[in-house]
Every structure is written in C-alpha cells, then in structure tokens.
Length: 529
Image 1 (tube, rainbow, N blue to C red):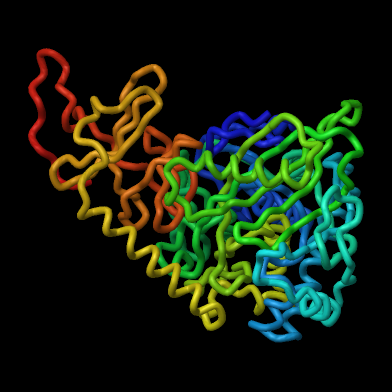
Image 2 (cartoon, one colour):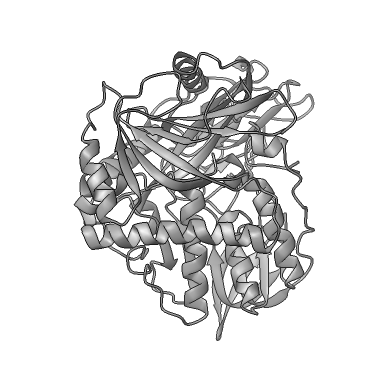
C-alpha cells in the first residue's frame, strides 16, 4: 500500500500493491546524477543510469509511486493524436520515428520486467480505436493507412471482436501492452537500490542552482551535488514559465467496476468521442470470480470544476450502457495529465538550454510510454550518446504546429487571473459546513478556507506560489488546485503537484468573519499574500 499520495481517491493499483518506503535525505550528498521524482519517469531513468554504472540519488517529495504513476490506467497505446494526426502535423518521417520510439519504449519495459523478474502483470494485447456515430472523427481508413506508413501493424476491421455492443468500424493495433504500474515501480526501486542507487522519500526539491562544474539540487533536507539532474516531476518545477506555456494541465477520471471473469475480452479500447472513453481490464485476484473493468475519460482543465463527481457518474453511465454485465463500482480515482500544445511530449535537455538538466513532461494520455522514452533519452544524453528521437521530442522546439490549441490554452489561462477582481465565494468562514471549502476575500487578499469533517478550520493564502493565480477547490480530492498551470495543494497548503515548489502561505490570524479566540484582539488587516 502507498504510505501517502497526492490526493484522496484510491486507484486499484494503490489498493493492490506493496510499495517500498525510503527514509528522507538526512544530510548533504553527492552523486553523478540526481533524479527528482520517484514515478515511472524518475525510477526508469535511475535504473537505466545505474545499469550504466552511474551513481544515482533519487528524491521524491512524498514517496515511490505517490504521484501520477499510481493514478494512471497503465496502458501502452498509440499516441493521443493518432498516427494520422502526427503525420498531418509533422510529416510521414516523424510519424515513423514516433512509432519506432513507442515500440522501443514498450519493448524496454517488457525487457526490464523479465531481466529483473518483476511480477507486474505485463501483458501484450491488441488495442482498438473506434469512432462513435456522433463523433466527427470518422475517417478510420486514413488512420489505418497512416499507421501502416509509420510501420505499425494495424488492420481495419468491421467491429471490435468480443464486445457486447457493436462498435462499428475500428482500427486494430497489434501487440500493445498493459501492466500494474505500482508493482512495476516497486520492482524498479528494488533494482535501483541493488545497483547501489539511493532513494529518499519525503525530500522535496526546491531549486536547481549552479555549483561550479556541478549542479546543486536544494531540498528540504540538504543539498545534493551532481553532474546531471533529471527533472521527472510530471511537470518541471525548475522552469518558471517557458514549459508551462507549451502544455496545459488536465484532470482525468477513472471508474473501476466489477465484471464476471471472462465476460469482457482482454484488450485495450479507445473511442474518438468528446468526451472520449478508454477501457482496459485488470485482474487483482486470479482466484476471484470477478475482474475490474477500468474505464476512464471525462477530462477537464485542472482547477476548473469544483465538484467533479458528475464526471464519475458520466463514465459509469457510459460503461453500463455498453457493458451491461458491469456490477458494483469498486474504485473511483482521478489523475493529472499534461497536454502538450502540438501533441508530442517534451523529453530531453531543459528548454532553457542547460545541457545538464533533463526534463520529462508533456505525457498526454501516454504517460507510461512517454516516461520510459524520456528516461531513455536522458540516459543517452548523460552517457554522451546520440538518440534518434531527441529532436522529435526536444523541449526547446517552438510551438509551430497546434498553434490554434496553443492560443486557446493561453487565453484560458489569462482569463483565470480575473479571479482577483471578483468577490469571495463566501463572506465569512462561519458559512462553511464540515467538509466544505471556499475562497474568502479579506480586504485586498484572498484566502482558501476549508472546514474539515471534524469542524476544524484550515486557512491558507489562495495565491498559487507559481505565478499568482487564485486556487480553486477540488471537492473530490479535497485539494486546492490552480486553474492556470495545474499546481495542486493540500488543505494546509502543502504542494501536491507542481510546477509550484513552495507551499501556499499560512494564515496566522483568524480569517475574515471568524471572531478571534477569547482574550485575543483581532489583528490589523494584512497585505496581499
């Protein structure tokens, strides 16, 4: 089980895996490479580098798998933009290169599971894309042909075989894959330590600075000196602006329902709807009479839906309409994905030009694939080897394709700053019932106020420490989420997800509308946080 996570919901992976825990960093340290983040990106990079003989230290603000890896649906599937989209935007040669990178990443994971004897349920199976009748993306023949040109073993079929509903025409992609992500991470972590790498949980990186010929990673517990740094924090915390204009943070939702064993074929399924849905099967207990049908989708911008429970309801309705054998809901969870403006992940040397800082971000809906790719690209760069995919995924590339999406996202982000000229959602914290939260205006500043189930009030500054947006409440995860660039904070202001590196400022005095404790005078108005 996970010791702690970055949200309240629990995935099927969190409930069915034992993940190793590692002590915080105790003092200053030195290594060849410091890897920041202990998800699949960070531990994959650490493992590959340790096998090359590099001394590696991995740090994570919470612990192994406590971020987004434990919230994925953990499948290896074609790119979110599909091969036809990649070919249209980047050309046929780029589509072939991308297909090669996806095949390689999946093969590397498969090889690691075998070499390290990791029992993580890795399984090769076919994936299917189908177009719902009400959706605009109907030219599956174009996708089929683009996939073939990219070297992908694809076929156009009349329908997805074995399902209880008629999907209509579909594209089949052979030999895709799925696995249990936290069991895989546990195996990677043990392998890293066996290879003399070090892993430290509860150690938050706060800055990366120059230290002569080395890099200095400042943390909550001490400094780490290293020649190279891999930033595998889902979204870079060390980049104040550049990368965060190139990608947008979205929340995605997953429901796991019990189905009778053998009633759903083992496959990966993706439709082209808006909202879209994606499906896989998980078997937590091989002896049980049922399995878990994992269905995800219903995405929205982070911080832009205060009460997202209706999204779970929509997924459940869709599932029951298409899979009538679905029984009780066993799991509901959500996770964060970073959507790159042009559809391709950002994997490689930092966009600021620092050749010794390597970033892995922009995972879109292909986190397991992209994170493994990022680890391979970073390892090659650190070892001084060329990589045939590096230019394709270069974080410094300009946003030339997908410019319309880029502009739309920037307009959306700028619109969020209008929150500063609005009133608070409540006038007094006394209006909050247990379990509720709201933004309260207190003179020139805004406060994020939550009353927990025990009735205790939690109040912090509502100003995101990244670029100053007003955070919004997430009633599902009980967190404060930034609608601008995707940072998330606990009710006490601690960072749950970057790019913010610092906690929300604490509020020492009672919030506006709450009388001070008996015998204590009310404090004077404060300046904005």
